Picture 1: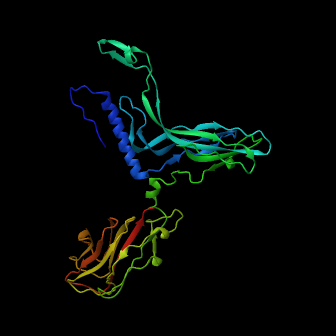
Picture 2 (picture 1 turned 135 degrees about the horizontal axis):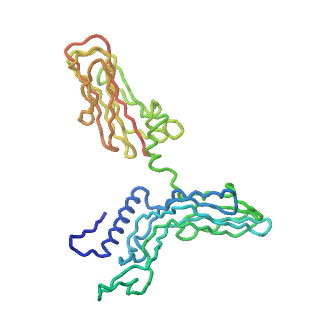
Picture 3 (picture 1 turned 30 degrees about the horizontal axis):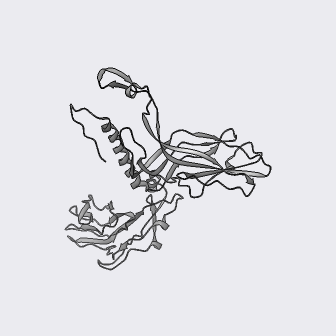
Length: 385
């Protein structure tokens, strides 16, 4: 984002302050573009009958996001900029009430269309104090002492209007066409003789671009409820036995990673990364002073995140000099575990599309006692919602 520079002792210009605000508008606009895209979206703006019911409807507070010229008209002493477009946020800070009328011809009905648009609106006109450049001690009221009021705020507005359709025989009534530059949100159908509007008269327009899922819902998907993860494979046998991570059909259900909102694993939204064969060591009596390793290689898809979980269950009495590590791409994630026997787990994030190798390593001490151990590498995949 561009920033203005001013200097001590220098006389600031009005364009310094105006440019700083325009720069902020442009920076915010491109941030919104990166997050929301260039298509028009609306948030809030719920439409409901009044209480008590009447022939009025109320459209709640909300916002519209729309691709617009930076400034379609001059902004103070800055010229209009219609060569560049940004995503602008228009706000309707308060509920708005609209009065509808029923058709008067018997057997007819009429459809009203509620539509929204982004608008720049210059408001808060006041007579500003000036000074006479030829005589700085003389105060002026308005430019050239004209007493003319001037707007002091350029308001980014979410404008709402209601457009009446043509009354027609009930059952054949149609909604009016949306106006150019406006976005259709709701239709409200009223019949001849109707004296109150109820919720059943109001319908959201098909395809109306309401924001139905915010960032908190995106993040909140990794929370309470049932979750799914790409199947873990824990083999038995010697190192290099060639076991392979299971397919999606073998999903193991765990806690709190992927939630479809209904307490079910989000299997339908999980794409399986490409996995290399896995080696495992399980149920074995260990040899003294020996390093055991299980390794899995994988590449997370570009539309999600992978989490690697390493687990080693050391049921044997190992020497205190033993160590347990989960290593990702050569970097140690977790280190010594004492006292033994013990279990170890560690979770690390992996960048999408990055080829990765995760290994569980542990080294036994010089003396051992009886028992066995197991180890596993589990790859969780959390898709973008």
